[in-house]
Length: 516
Image (cartoon, rainbow, N blue to C red):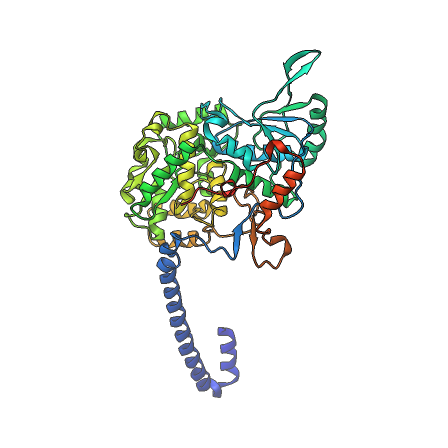
């Protein structure tokens, strides 16, 4: 710019006054534009700092966009035949929610193979050390009745008579490949079933591919997960009593505070703990996970570490939640003791958990068992807002996010740990100016529970949209809701199909979710 002005000065001395006049005008315009830009930035900063996240609106459900949950069949769906190809046994390993996903996969696998499903076994030697089994956690009668249009289910493999003797049929044991394809079940598994009459798939965690290009198969998974798998009456009653006590004082939020030994060991986040605590975490990791070099500073910088309780509190405070917010904590034993909870409790003193709210005393006897986890699941499902603090490999959080989406687009607050990590690191260095605004900016880019496209690595169990949702006025025929009499149609098919063992009229309870 200066060289061009110098050239003009040398070549056009007479135009210097005009140039200065035009330059002065340009400077004035530039100043006006700069002031206007600064005003806009300040205005935008103000809107982001408080009004960008409307806390009051978060207590309501997210916008549905005209979608509603629907997992009923939308195309020809014949009933299970009286004669099947054999019996399918499965052993569901892991915790309650890993087992829940496995049960959904087992029902679908039985449908794919035209098999009779034996009531799934829940691993008693898992992390929970709980031998409650399927009967101890779920309503078996409701489970079998709800799925009568889909698969035949028995509680055990029947005895067979051979050469005048009665004996138990022995199931052929197979270790299925992880995320096995549909074709594996229709070839390898089915061949063994026809050969032996029954197969036993163990272990059965993540043994059927999640992404299947068949919407009806995916909808069957939703029918199992959100309708057939209902906890036993005493668990539902206990969950409802806790929810009623929480809601008696207004809205409440549920937080899955995943600051526990197994997850911290898995993530490799050790440096914030004492040397003795680090030894415990490292020992647990060596015993339970594959060797891998993990550098804490690198893991932390990319958001791979679970949020600390204090960080959770700072996020909520930055978003605009105050210390009157009622919070239900769904968590096991927090690692590191009370020193990590004190900062969180100072920000949000109205904290509860299933032990503090259980007047029956049942959960105090076995707070870490499947029943305690089931109650936590139901309270989190029915909460006004749910916040998972580590949604990576957490089956509990991932299943709940999917269930809350299906249960009416209930609000979820999912921290973007990768975006938040540098903000917290700067704060630890003493750079606190603009901290809350930076947190709000990061949180504004998250999804609060409305319908959204499923993108890897998001699981089908976390987001079953659009397969398990429909629109009354859909543009795409595939998204149209099934007819109102779909259960009558399925009932008539069941009757004409001669499946007398499972013949029963549909009731509204068979497709209901616990009501608020």
